[in-house]
Each structure stands twice: as C-alpha cells, then as structure tokens.
Length: 67
Image 1 (tube, rainbow, N blue to C red):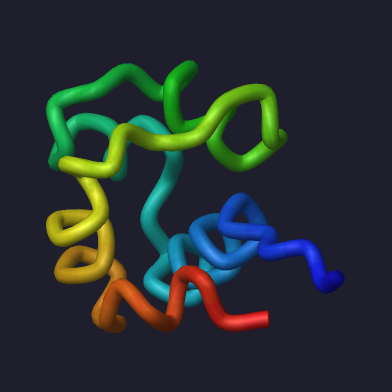
Image 2: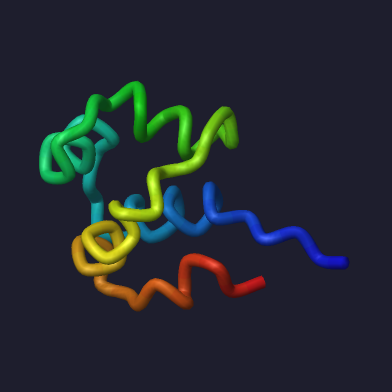
C-alpha cells in the first residue's frame, strides 16, 4: 500500500508559490506553527481547510493526495 504524503505536497506547492509558512497561515487564519506541523507530518490540516489550501496553492484537492 502506498503512503499519501500530503505534507510534502503542501510544502512543495507553497514553496513554488514563494509563500512563507507565516504568510500561508495568515491567509488561512492559522499560525505558522500549524503550517509547520502539517509540513512535518506532526498533524494534518482539518478537512475543512482543503478547499482553501488547494485554491491558494493553485491546485485541486486531488493533487494534494496524488501519490
């Protein structure tokens, strides 16, 4: 079974857009620490954030789960 690594997807898309963790968190209304936790696989973003995350990063939700 392949592991879906949403953390890497968020990090890579965010860096491609040249958005800092603080900027990204500010847009979403969460802290930079929350974004850091998502990207380090300490925790995952709440499912309700996925549409906004995808829109900000210029992708679709499915892209975040692509293996």
